[in-house]
Structures are given as structure tokens and as C-alpha cells.
Image (cartoon, rainbow, N blue to C red):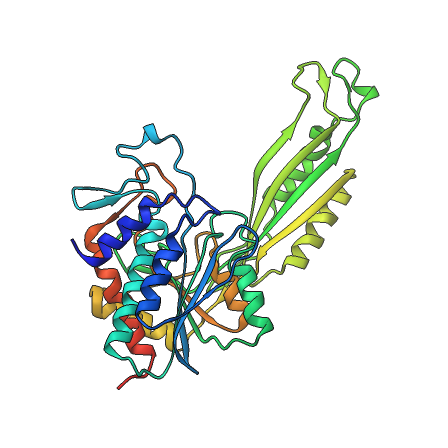
Length: 377
């Protein structure tokens, strides 16, 4: 059994459902310390974060990942227990196999191999891990980034091990992400009997025309790097449970995924103005999860493309699509960010898996990238 397969299996066995780490970082910290890395544990609230570094000065390249996973759902829905790694037909099954314990195992091994080959390399190689990526993401990399900013930590290049690939390893990398802005809307009405609507104010009826306009609005046209900004309602709730009662309020959760053509402040202002224009009585709480970011060019993007061609033998696509990642907290520090990891077809699903062939190539891919970016004899 290969080292990366064995380490990934050990990580999967630790049921680290967010925000729990379940001992993953202790295992990895021990390995990295044995390889000569300096270890710093940054715990905030219930969240474990690990910062391991080797070398000194710049340039600073680090790998970023998370040890937490989403819940498995009913274990009986899986063909094998979600936290007991299983090999079948060239695939490794288990919660976190692709998102992202396989990547974490791979870049930890790549880091060990790099410093073993180049113990006196120039610059700094780092590994940053959190157990708060799949959850609320408040005490994970968001807090670590605040700590780094406060102490003036130098950071140049960040490789996030998120499962970026579409059909085969390395066919797509993320060079940026859209911003994410959520709204929690409370529409106030007047409760009453459905037979006497003149004595009530139905918040559903009041909001419906505004919702139609929100959904139909073209918020921007996007640009060469980003698709247009999107608006989606993810939850809507009203009613007392009785069929003859007009509800007194309506609660709506919605989200903007926005490009660099829009700003969070601008979207807030336009949305609130639209609601006021429709005469709605409302309260609205906003939550900005992250601003959009983009690595336009430079050594990290260029050498990631070259490393993929060398190890995987294919040309890669550079994309800013998909959801978001912890890279959104690192990019505002002035760091170039690229996301490179395995195929994402089964992430968050029952029977999540990763191809063993891809898993065994990942350490070589990360090692190739480190050797291209960090000077060494």
C-alpha cells in the first residue's frame, strides 16, 4: 500500500465532522515535526488550526486544507461505512476521501519529500490546516488570517487542495472565486383569517412581486474572468400550520454569488431599494462570507499549469466557477491563490470516493509545484 493511500485511510477513519478535528491534525503535526517543520497550534473556540513551516524568509509557499468533513447522512445509505475506508474497483471510498483528506495527505507527504530532498532550500514551505471549513468558517482560516495580518506574516503563494478537477486530475484549477453575500429577510405582515383578507396583510403576497423582480434582475454582465452575478433563494418559510390563517410574517434566506463587476455594498443598496420600492415592511440582516478574488497571472498560476502538464500530461483550464473556499480569507492578505485537487464528482455525496491512481499522483503534483516555486540547490 502506498504512503499516500495509507495516510488518507488513517485520516478517513477519524470521524472529523465539522468543526471537530478528531485527532487528524495531531497525527499530521507529529509527522511534520519529525520532518523538521516548526509546529504552531492556533485554537479558536472549538476549532483546531495547524500552521507548520520549514525554512525561513521568502518566498513563502504554503498548502492550505481542512481536516473537517460534512456529515455522512444515514450510514445505511452507504455501501460501506462512511468512516471506514474501503477499496473497490480502483476507488477509495469514505467521507472526506475527495473533500479533502486525500489532498491533505498528499500535500503533507509532498512537504516531507521536499524538505528531505532539499533540507537547505531557500524561502519557506508551509502547511495550514483547519477544522472549520465545512461549517460556519468563523474560527478557522478567517481567524488565522486575522492573526497573520496582525503579526505581519509574510505569505506569497497559497495552494488550496480543494477538489477542483472536473473529469480527470488536473483538467481544471480555480484561479479565483466569486464573492458570497447572504441575506436573511424578515417580511412583516398582519396575521388574520383567510376569509377576511381586508383585516390582515399577507406578507407572502406583499413579497411575491419583489421576489419576481429580484429573480429577474441582471445584476451585472460579469467579465472575462467571472460569470455574471447570480441571485438565488435558498429558503422561504411562513405560516402557522393552519390552512385558514394568513401568516403574520415571512422569512427568506437568499444569496448573491458576485463577480468583481459588483460590490457587496452595491448589492445591498440595490436590493434594499427594490424592497422599499415595493412597499414592503421588512428587516434584513446581511452576512458577507467573502469578497471575490482572482490570481490573474504570476509564478503560482504559471507554474501550476506547467506542473500539471509535467505530471498529468494535460493542459488545464483556469476557472473562477463553483462555490467558495478558504482561499477567500487568504487572498485579501495580498497572496496569490490557486486551488488544485482531485475530481469533485462525489464530494458531499453518499459513497464519496477518489480514484486511487489520482490519489497516488497528487503528492508528485504538489512536489513538482514546490520544486518549481521554491529555490533549492
